[in-house]
Length: 503
Figure (tube, rainbow, N blue to C red):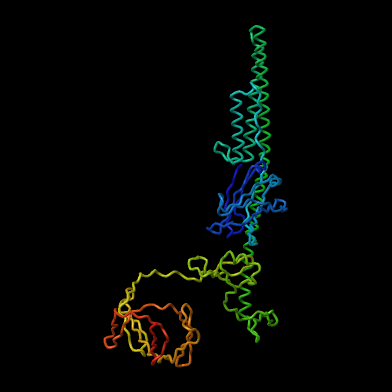
């Protein structure tokens, strides 16, 4: 399989590559195509491709599916076209265009390339006849094949330029030379047979040798005639190519003239429009719409003279989500959307896009440039001071901007209101029985009450003690052991007194 690799630039138009090819070569050829947008490769991830062919007679083929490799494949971002034999049915220029469809529904048409189909006669292979090919004949055949190949690339092989005239003349001379050599060989063989004075057996042997040489000479003459036929066919093909080149030259000349005429017309039209606008410029109607002059009067265009303010119609969290929503996101063509996901590390965050006819087009990155990284700072605590309750809290940096030392001033809290004291504690249920709970109620000065329970434990032994209020000490009396039983709690001026009695 012979593979041809070409590159097409989608930022440019017109025919970008011409590939000459013999009709017999189509069944073993592939074309590997890479797409560029100026200097940047076109990413073909998730795309499919088809080839549309326009034949020399103007007929257009059905789209032919092609292999399309994405960025992660071995043939990264490459489209492979396998040529078929029906592409070679007509001589001339076969124009090819690729249709690339993305999975979001967009379609891209590639620049065109041309396969120039030619029907060049093949070389006549030598006839294998044992004993009939001499060394001279083999050299002659080899030389003739080289000369025929030399015609195909435009050279005679001896430094001269190939043309229909000198090719025909050269091969005619070679054919005559081979025929003359063959006749001379035959005559020499006959003379040798008739003049021989050897025995009859030797004469018969020599006659057989002469007969074989005659056959070989006839074969050489036949091959010379075949090569002459091939040269004549090549001459006709060369003439066809010459006429085709002339047609291309005429077409190019016509296109160049058309382009020049179009440029003149564009210039004249531009001058006309500039003159027309300078004398009858557009005006703004009372309703705010633009009005243009139609040759007799001004007419309302229905288009407002006040442009729409810049607004972001919709936000997406990723480019993938934006592309998926293209067809149904209710964003009009010409309106803006933005990628917003809050991730400052995402390179797509804050990118702005405008909606086009077939896809969203990138405009700019609204996140701005990253600032210069600053020096790492330090922070330490200096002093902490308590100030009057009516002063505000304050923090003062007594260090530097990169090595801060913070002094704190914290106001003292304001003195609170007097709390509510307890007015009484009363037993509301229970009889102090061992193993049971008594319930008490505590009443405060503001009338608030609080209920709680006290578990009645077994009576135990306690050591008698006295509390000395003057020394704030407890005086122990180890010699007196009595059994006490709690009998009540009494509130005396806000102080709870627990009363005990001996058991």
